[in-house]
Image (cartoon, rainbow, N blue to C red; front, side, top):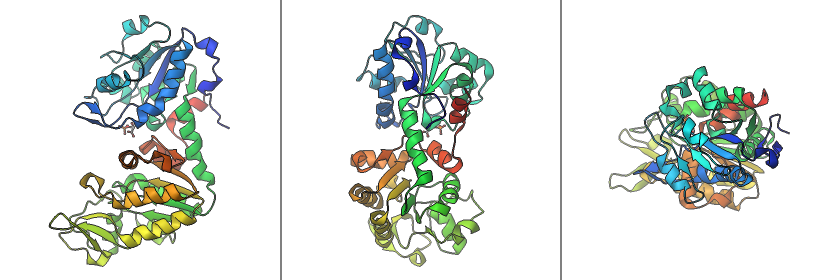
Length: 375
Ligand code: 3PG
């Protein structure tokens, strides 16, 4: 049971002609001004279409990257699925006034306004005045105490969207995961993963660490990491190294001089090496644990995917696909790998959230959830 109101609590008849302000997360990867990964957009469509078909006046608000970026490519992309009116203003009162029932307006990148990130009260009031009802469909941005997540929600009748509820319910399953429970944590930024590892360690059976985040641990243990990426921002590593169910890679793949791939044991890594993926022994141990598990949670690729080191991630995707365990995966880069392999069906739940999913698991809540609960 969720203790916040959901879009499904609204009577469709009461939505006809209502101005509904929907906070979505259209912060999606772009290349040369084109959307290259539409996962978040696709997952937001059911809420948008429901409101549109019900006859509401739908006002979509989102951020995109930093304050410099524009949502115009997303508007062009969305037009494939439903007619979108795009405004290049963050606050466009005229465009909202002109909306007919069932029309959908997308406003410009919220972060172009300095009041968004600072949760400025006056900006939140102006944003809120655009709508009569607020829907948070941006679970993946709900760790940000920004005006569009927190400020507006305090001012309007507020509900969680369909995707928001799915994210909340599925990620909450991690807290009661049936055992054996296997966790795989990769990626580069150890600082963002450390609270999750600490939270899950007491009730998971195996936590496999991979990716560049491991390198700082290896340095601490006295191993050579060569020219590999190291997240030095975390210094308090002793607790993690003491945990018996936390496993570091047994072997790695390094980039060979000729562009090839070499398997090495941790003590064979040289001063010029770039560690780029988990080795076969490591992947074998992870796959064994996935096979035995009743629940699997994965966040962060184990390889340097930008340089094409997808091997370990691909094997993990396949192993999870074959397993009967309930599987949850999250994180922008991990979803990017799954997208490139067209393997969404291998998982029970693929989260649209990166940082927000980590923060939710580490703390059990998010600012955007708390504000909905307090309504
Ligand atoms: C994300 O991509 O994780 C969310 O859209 C949040 O973006 P942010 O880290 O720029 O706040």
